[in-house]
Image (cartoon, rainbow over all chains, first blue to last red; front, top):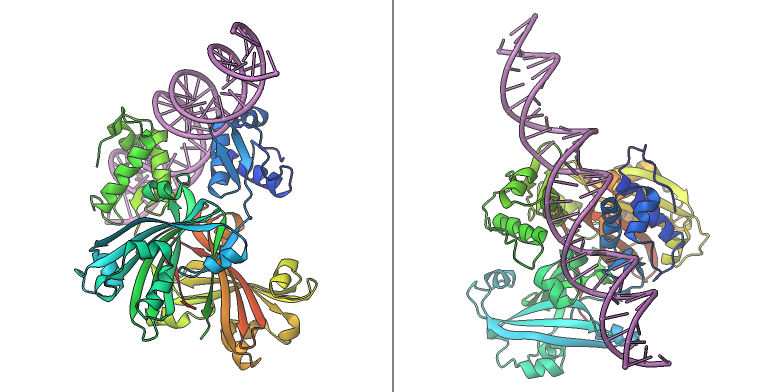
Length: 243
Length: 243
DNA sequence: TACAACATGTGGTCTATACCAATTATAATA
DNA sequence: TATTATAATTGGTATAGACCACATGTTGTA
């Protein structure tokens, strides 16, 4: 591990961060291995523990390291990732990979939501179904999503049928609607508060926030989904047209 | 702004963060307005300036606030965002929005890159062109990308023609290749080091990292691009098939 | 009135220390 | 030998203060 240079114009925390990162990337520490404690790094480099903490904080935020109160700081298995196809259609990919994949319905209710209605080109007061689901791979939550459907277009939609079938399949078979294209926006976010709690991740984890509108063959909006992905072990993968 | 409760089990920094965030969301502070200084917030809440700094750090990382050394902390215009269509094809969208949009070639060279070659289904030793570009909206960098092309498929590709034409157009007109589909992966990252420097953003800004492979009508890989987007003012938008 | 010097206020970095909560290691006891 | 209690080690939170670098405001002088 590289030494800290007190005479460098670069901040001490920055030098230490780069030093640790380089050591991790050069496999001076293997995945899962515990790093020297913050107090040890502080004493070794003759700097304050808070400065060490700031350096490690950054590497933890970036996913390189994992911290466990009472245990230590460990090298994260950063690039062990499962590629995830777009919403509504990746059970097949999970099965292909032999992974245990489940969906848990957190809530299903008829609500009004101006923002979602407007996104769906509906009257802001239009009643909507909101389906809140948690998706898990190997019992680990990775996706938290809210899907909105117009009540008028999906009468008699029942929670128990949602529990036993994919939404995609119900839309197709029961309502005879063929989903054709989707438009999506994605941005990087920090997972916090209720989102982090529901996804069982530590506050401050990097994630992807995703809004998708799916349409039928006549370009009519059929459903709108907002979703949070955890970013540490999963990448979002998709295919699109160039023209 | 909500008061801090020293008896709450919630950490002080967390309460302050939520308090400031709620104030911003309730428009107690307008976009561009300066917040009370860290020292003022510390004194007002009877907590340490470092605790205030930690709370504000989080809101800055999340894009809600902007800090300027020597000036203060300001409310960011967070949701003023330009949606960005996928790579290679959004000059039109920028023009549609009446925005000044330019591309700056940072580097164009013939190189070898095993990782990129393998991504492109080429021999790991195959010579590649690497085109490094910075894209700017209103003179503000928002995208840094490296595009790789097989030298064998793009003989006589010259830097000056890249400066005067879009790559997309050259691929189509000069090489008679019709790009048809693209596969991409996106993940949230922290922009640091050389990337942050080239994009002229502060270290630690949230961004999107993007890898895309574009194919022709015969599903042959034509180009591979890796790119960093800044996340603070831009969302990545795309359309995909559902089937 | 304009400019320069100085003062003040701002965020950035760092140190030292203390205490809390969680986990692990060690010692004592049955 | 196994279990329990205690001690030590770990990261988490917080305080107080200092100094640096940058930006802004104020004052003095030409």
